[in-house]
Length: 264
Image 1 (tube, rainbow, N blue to C red):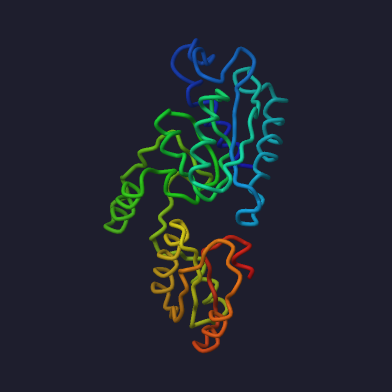
Image 2 (image 1 turned 90 degrees about the horizontal axis):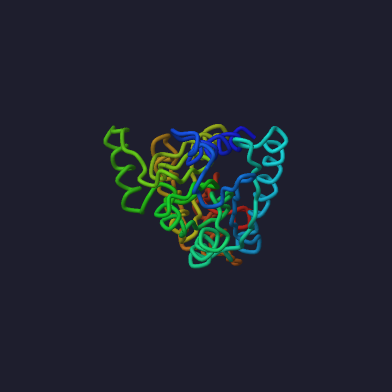
């Protein structure tokens, strides 16, 4: 709930809460009329990763109802006018993002509920306020730009900023994927585990998560004795991996996958 409140506050600030009264009324902004602010969202279908991404639309509608009952934003009602399916693919994500801006004429994109935010560069180039689930480096910038910030952090510098200033992930626009991840190592230590295994997809965000998980295990003294980073979405046969876990005497398993993959 608090995260959605932050999104709505930001929505009212970007483009609407500017210097003059005329600007504050949203004059000349796409998707802003005398009575409403048009917002559109996009998500991947549940069939892609067995994750109910589309539930994000229900959350946005529910919170918009709360805001609208309190008078809206500058007297304008927030309205979710489009709920697009990106088919769970990078090309589909780009098409959906373009459709929201060029066809649906929205002021902002919310929510973005997808595992691959390929449309991020387009939305940033159009300065479209965008809010959603951040599991992709695209919320901050290109992969090269994102990595440069990670490298700066590793060098003890914390003054770098994301280039895509109109994109807002629910965990912030920047996630340090390569930084040591505390949670897996902490849980392993709490359980007295010493020998860990790691499973990931080949997808870039999954691979980046693996990098941080490895760093966390190393930092907290957990031996990573087995990895399988070759898994594809929808995999079914893990018999070889199971045998390897037994052979390596693994006592803790960490994954960088969706629920469907992790629970197999």
